[in-house]
Image 1: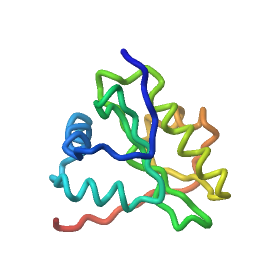
Image 2: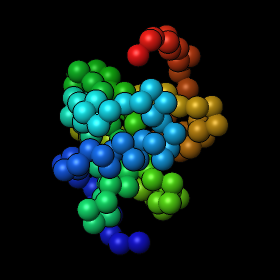
Image 3: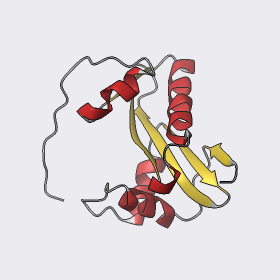
Image 4: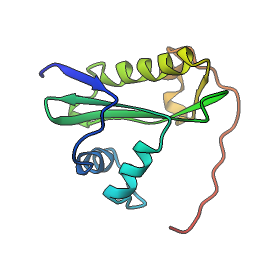
Length: 134
């Protein structure tokens, strides 16, 4: 593995983002390349991890920039997982929130609670979602 570069500069081709989401099983609602680009560029803060020109990971914060920042879309290509890339992205997202006095929050699957507790997150509420037709 080459050096991983972390940047706020988005990929030139968001097809890479679509490939990342599909590799993680995250595109069940069939987001288009245009929608993924809008999603990333419309976020308060987004980090991209590249190996050379290849997008290998990303994470975002959705926020008004004042009180709360919701960390979401934190993912790494399966073949790059367990190399500290997700941890590096998460630390950068947390640092950006804290530097701006924004409280970082996130929702995760139950089996990931202990992972996020290692970063100082504490369970505080029940998450809920409402299905819509897309």
